[in-house]
Length: 285
Picture 1 (cartoon, one colour):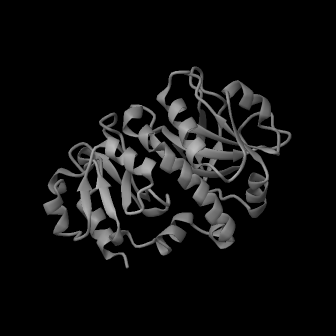
Picture 2 (cartoon, rainbow, N blue to C red):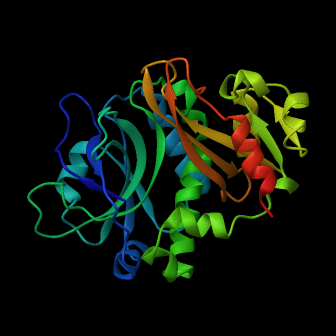
């Protein structure tokens, strides 16, 4: 889905990526499943991301062997085909006039003969945040996001036909019933015209609960099988015009239950889940 275009950005331990319509091949997946995963940490030793990604991988990752490494070590390893890498990357979408940079959680496989990172094959990626947004708004969800990445790889391996078409189409066609779950929402991520349970019930007559970010993290830690939560990736007031991604993930299975995005502009469209999203979810079979 993404392709590397730049080397390390000075002073930042993430790669800059250009979003592409790339899907991994079956050979890529087989190489990944036979590799050892190296989890690349940020250069800032006290970054909350470093603590959360290590905790998440230790709790959730079972697909391959893994090891935590520094960015310097990654630079020495990326040519090795028996190695794969989980790391936070910076993504810029092609032809996006806003030039917005996003943090993504990405998996790559090693490739021989490269002079730089620009052609590393990627296996999976999921947006974490806008680069300007503080960690507190997204880092508490790392365990579910890591588990989703693992589940996603397994899903592609078990359903090879999905890597030949739009992956989100596959999830939309195979979404499990969200209506049997309790949807956890953080109030500041819900549009003001629908930010009470009573208002939501009028268009989405299923279980909804307003909670704190700490309660979302607790449900993730406990792997509550009855809970799904909103993973919102938006500008948090850092930009006048930007995309807002809305992803709903299960805390037990880390399955994707809903995905959409809309444009946030000054005076138009709230940076969060909208009434139209509840209407779409209510229509799901």
